[in-house]
Picture 1 (spheres, rainbow, N blue to C red):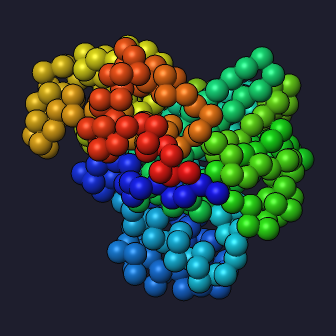
Picture 2: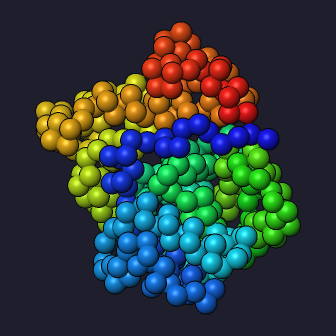
Length: 347
């Protein structure tokens, strides 16, 4: 059985504490607590959140506080599948305008693509990948240790599937699910909800779809609504990311590291800023592009090293290092341990 990682925080505190969730999604956490007969307002206050903020348009709430809400609510409810049960209180506007953009898509494949593209409207510091083959599409998630609740992340996936089912039909299901956490005697409940085989203690959290199932045309499609809502979604996301420079840079690096050559010039262009303006904004908050890039490489290295099936050389390649030796030197600087020794210590 794999032990918990030695490191208890995989992002810098300055980044983690700035991460936010949009209030319309956090309403799901409030609704879930209420559904279980809990005093949702009291739970939110205990977590440092004024419940009134939930109903202020486009307001955002610190992720680490929402993490407390999910964890306290699940514990008080006594329900071991609390995150999945959140789908029972999902509602059409839970992802802001992104909900409309998704729901008016031509296919579920397009829905998944939009969720990946605009997901930071919901969560500014989420780690996701979208991997595609000829037969399957796989969407992965990995909660940030210390700032995101595993329960909340599962609630997000459960509610996303519910959104897909509203358009594709109640029988629409993934082809398979994988979870990093233990099964805990709950396999039947998970497989009943997702209506597919669920694997536990896997290398990654992933919801997988057969390509043939997600390319079927949807009766709910509306190109005009989709185009208008996607434009509004893109504009809102731009405002969110430009208003939080550190998280914007950090999130872009998390998403694109190892997939393309990264530079401060490219990041600045993506943020619609000049390179000099971006440098000035980062300096104002006491950091640099180089420091953030190093932080991202460290965070991803500490995640990949947990997967015993991933060779050290492959980790080095994905993080943009020229070879395993250069990666090893950086890893020792981050952890005071060689990569292989660290991997052995957490198994």
